[in-house]
Length: 158
Image 1 (cartoon, rainbow, N blue to C red):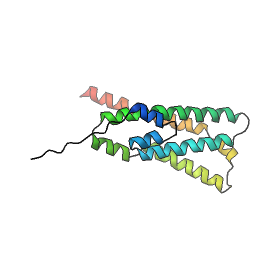
Image 2 (cartoon, rainbow, N blue to C red):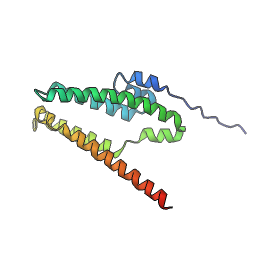
Image 3 (spheres, one colour):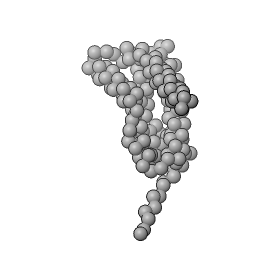
Image 4 (cartoon, one colour):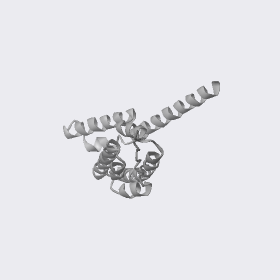
């Protein structure tokens, strides 16, 4: 009998980070096309919102663009490390799924931008909604923390 050897393609974390100087490209390199596309759309959306902001909103949006740009570079680096630690099947499944909170965020951004393109709301009004991003991320991290605490408590009770 011949055994099939699975060749695991190791990904270079530094290469993924360098490629991410163009938002999303590092994740495309890793094979995570959904997340790469989402990062590209988020970056473009932040640029559009920053370009349409006025007055005191400008520094906030510029900081958001810069912060997200740096975040997605580090995220690509970390994703490459995770990819190298997992087997092919688990990694393939992980790359094909998108978290629920990300899906909801994409849906909300799409709806808000569609309302703006239909002139139901203006980009000026959208720029006032940016704190909702922080609220959403805060809820996500609190949920993740509480979920991890429940798992730890369950392990201790056994």
